[in-house]
Length: 278
Image (cartoon, rainbow, N blue to C red):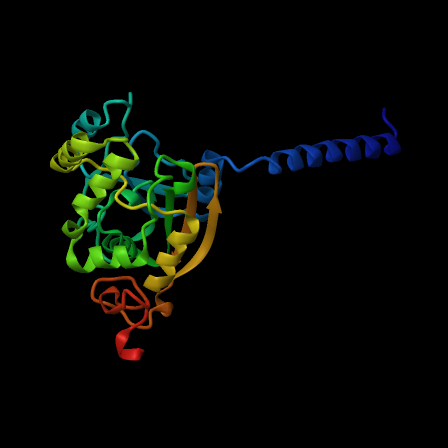
């Protein structure tokens, strides 16, 4: 039998090896899959939804139950996204910008991985996400980081742009979005640029209408004065994750049907302040 001293020495050696392995792992750039899973297991519990899971539904902890929501039925999703061998069949067909199927304060969490950049009215979508969350519920978002994606050459979406689209309707900038995408992402030029842009718009192709990196997205959240606590912001090699917790006590002014600390309709797009208080 090993002596007590030998056992202690062996225990210390194993502990040292574990710590070195841990430090080596932690010194590597964060992987997006591991970061998503870590945040999901840390913050998600109860009953919630995942919007637009498609071919990669998010792993969740045992205490979480997920209803899958998408904009079309499974057969239509497989047709649209035919490059994928498998698609998560949705339980509910609904529009992410409205979520009319779900009542106010009805869910413990809402997940939307790489969804918000595809919607034409992100303010309306955020409003719907927060509307359906119970107080204390978690909004789990991941978005592509424009610095590390094909969106790199594109101009970052400003707060003013997003608020204008919300107030005046997505049609005011829709054609410009498709034109920019055809030019800077697909590389179309001349007559091909006009033709391709019109083709994408006619198909209502789900491009990245909006382009963010962590700093510019956080600027948007701050300008909207959301009634939330920021629980986590994590950047990885291709995306960034934002975890928000609904906190109605932060709502200084509750706009009708919105989860914002200030009605988005009353925000001055130049200053981010309420004109009546300026």
